[in-house]
Every structure is written in structure tokens, then in C-alpha cells.
Image 1: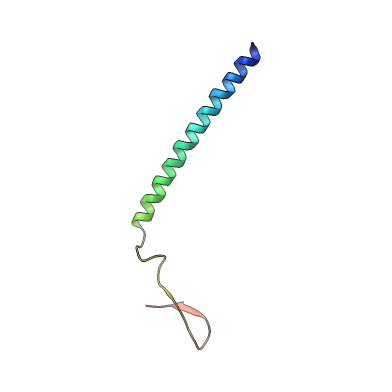
Image 2 (image 1 turned 90 degrees about the vertical axis):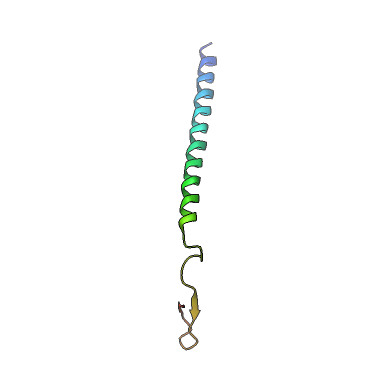
Length: 61
């Protein structure tokens, strides 16, 4: 009987942990979505242009 109670407690605890992790993942996804919406719509920043003399990339206009 004690084993049955222990298994039931582990099952309830596992279910609770899974629900908490799902909720936290949803919160993080929401924060990431809000941050992405506020981000620069043109991408990651200035485009890079190849300098033909040096062969290196530099920020372009």
C-alpha cells in the first residue's frame, strides 16, 4: 500500500512539474515575441559591404 501512495505522489509531482515548465516556457516565448516586435525591422543592423582593396567587410550605408 505504501508503494502505491509513493507512486501516486510521484505521478502527481511529475504532472505538477511538467505544468510549471510549460507555463514558464510560454512566459519566455511571450517575452521573446515582444522583444522581436520591438527589434529593428530591417534586420540585425547595418549591411556589410566588401571593400575590394582590402578584401574585408565594413558597415555600409
